[in-house]
Structures are given as structure tokens and as C-alpha cells.
Length: 396
Ligand code: PMP
Ligand code: GLU
Image (cartoon, rainbow, N blue to C red):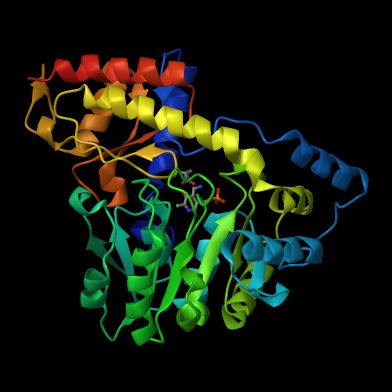
């Protein structure tokens, strides 16, 4: 079958591919522990489920308005004021089928053929692929563990060319867990202000999973407010990955463009999920304290156990639920006929030998690291890391 040429440019999502592989191996009876997918192991809170049941019983079952129900968009306006000090109006808010679609809408709205999109690495897997699908040119800006994997103002400015259209980054970051401080964002904002045609996607989906304290939004800097699209959603904080609901706060031209795109692609986001999201977005975020504390304990446990493994080099992530250790010390080692040359080789070796599924750093633009999602119970994490330790000790 002759598929469209755009498909040949498109990679499968590495995170979803690894979790699919883990699921298939489990179905074959293998005792696989999957630390591959970034998805909370908590259940959606009952008050959110109740809001969905009420919506269903009240027959919110017809096509919703394409940009989202007014009550949800207004609740999001209030959320942005309450948590981020951002003054959006309803017209700036578009609700979509997951933050992933929100990002795709914005990229398709702004990026055309040959436009360059700056993406600091390590980056979340889908940014590059979405840009490629929009015929844009991803321009990767590498960062290192020594600078906590963060983009500096200097590196940003050096990467900007007359073709640069957009910058995409996340904080807290998937896959590194790095969290940008106020001062770091202020320095980036000073560069962004000098290039008024530059649009920035600030992906803040892990906002509430922050061990460092206050979350900082890039759009808080007034001089660049109209250049920034703030991405957020309910998947991570409210354990609602399957409900598929994300949203943006954006300059009105971009919001209108996203509305037009999804009017042709999805006709808007699932009506029941939207009503459930009203409850989530309005809820007091202090109810998340226990979940954040659990994630922090798991992070500390994993760091302690991983640091006992020779050759593992970990940064200390301040947010999200990932560790991104450098495992390049194992390159060139072997076990039987298996030689480890890359992070990809190592993640496949750990899947075969330790029955632990992780994601190779190559998918996130870093060839020396692997990503471990610690969104699972402490017992499972202990078992997984013990298996990893045993398998790595076999490499000579
Ligand atoms: N951005 C980042 C950085 C993510 O890790 C994810 C993963 N889910 C998303 C966006 C997409 O979130 P959603 O589930 O709302 O589509
Ligand atoms: N964002 C999650 C991850 O990075 C979920 C997978 C996906 O949406 O691609 O694992």
C-alpha cells in the first residue's frame, strides 16, 4: 500500500511504543515491570468522576462548542489567575483532546514549510514529530546534566536565525524533571522579547508535580505575554490521562486558529470529560499535596537505589515523575553475544534480561541516558531497580 509521504517522516511515539511492547510481553506471561509510560498510578479522584456521572445523567452527550464549554473555559481563566498570575480571557482559552492535541494545534497554526522550531534537548518525544508533520524544521539545542539540562539565554540567542518561528520547552521537564526558576525564565524572556515574531510553547503539564516550591510560568513576563502559549491539562495532576483533555492560554489569533483546526479535526473535546474537567480545574490544589509527597518519596528512593549502581549518573530532578540517568559508562560492555553500544541497546537489554521496560534517551534527543518513570509504587520500584542492578552487573 502506498501511504502518504508524510508518514515516512513520522516516528512512532517511543513512549507509547515501549509501553505497548511491555503490555504485549506481559500478555505472553512474562513478568514485566513497566517504568516506560509517564502516567500516574493514582485513580482519578471521586469528585471528578461524580462530575462526569452527573454530566452524563444531565445529557451532556451532544456536540460541545468546538473551543470548549463556556463554564470550563471560564474555570481555566480562573485557574490561570489563581495558580499562575496570568490574565487570560475566555477568548484566549481553547480546550482540546489532551495537551498533545493542544501542542499539535498550536504548531499547525504557526509553523509552515521550512520554519525552524527550537527544541532544547532532552525534549518530550512528540515535539519533534509534530513539528515534522507540520513541515517545520526541528532545531535541537543540546543541554547537559552539568547545567541541569536547562536552556540558557545565551544558547537560545545563538540558535535564533531569520527562519526561527517557535521555541518549545517543558517545565517541569519530561524527561529530565528539571524545573526552571523565576530568574532562569526571566533571562530567557529577555531574549524572547528581542524577537517579537518568535512564538514560545511553554508546556506546563507537570506544573503541580513540583518538589521545589512555586511553579513559574513564562507568560508572567508582560513584555512577552503575547508571544507565549501556555499549555496545560488535567492528565498528570488529576490522574486523568485516559480522559484526554488539555488546554491552552494563547494570544487570541492563535486561539482562533486552533479553534478552526479542531473544528475540522475533532469537533471539540469529549463533552463528559469537559464537565469532569470543570471540577478538576476548580478544585483546591492543596488536595494534591499527598500525591506530590508520594512522588517525592519515590524520587528519593529511586535516586538512593540508582546511586548504589556503579556507572549510573543521576541529576536530582525537581519535578515531574522521571529520572534521566546517564548510563554511557556501560557502552562497549557485553553479556554473552549482546554488546551494548547505545542507550537503545541498553534499554532493550534491560527489557530482555531484567524484564524492566524503560525508554531510551535517544527518543528524547540524548544518546547517553535512559528515562525511568517512577509513577508506580515503592515496592515495584525497589524490585525493578534491584533487577536492573543485577542485569547491569552481568555486563563486562
Ligand atoms: N507534554 C508533556 C511534556 C507530556 O509528558 C505529555 C504526556 N502526556 C503531554 C504533553 C501530553 O499530555 P496529554 O495526556 O494531556 O495529551
Ligand atoms: N507523556 C507520557 C510519556 O512521556 C505519556 C506518553 C505519551 O503521551 O506519549 O510517557
